[in-house]
Amino acid sequence: MPDMLVKLYDLPDLQAALSRVGLRRVSIRRALPPEKHIVSDWVQAHFGSAWGSECDVAFARVPVSCFLAVRDGDILGFACYEATCRNFFGPTGVHERGVGIGTALLLACLHSMRAEGYAYAIVGGVGPAEFYSKAVGAVLIEGSTPGIYDGLLR
Image (cartoon, rainbow, N blue to C red):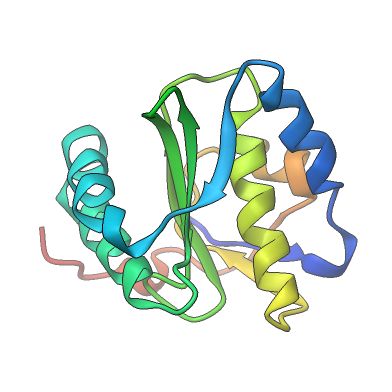
């Protein structure tokens, strides 16, 4: 799967995305260190051990580079950045699709990366390229397959 490049200085408004999911009582927030075991276990149970491992790494950063979508104390989705490589977005996963949660998580991470001083971000090993293109204007990076994940132990 190819990587994609995102201009962080030309992102859609984060507040609009947060308001959209807020209408469904979903809050998007940065995960807290005491939640590490809960979040990592949830990610591993729903998306596999590789993403669970990347989530663990996101909790080792200061600030934690994992954002959560939560409703009534239940995790609905997550998104991480700088888990596998510097300046990389991902992994991310959502259970309720089509309501804006994925977009809100993506924007929360990308705006955070911008605030940390990056001008561009790389979405590593993209699955839904159309989603990233539509949501944040991401473009494919030619020649990026198989990319950093080549030879990954499974």
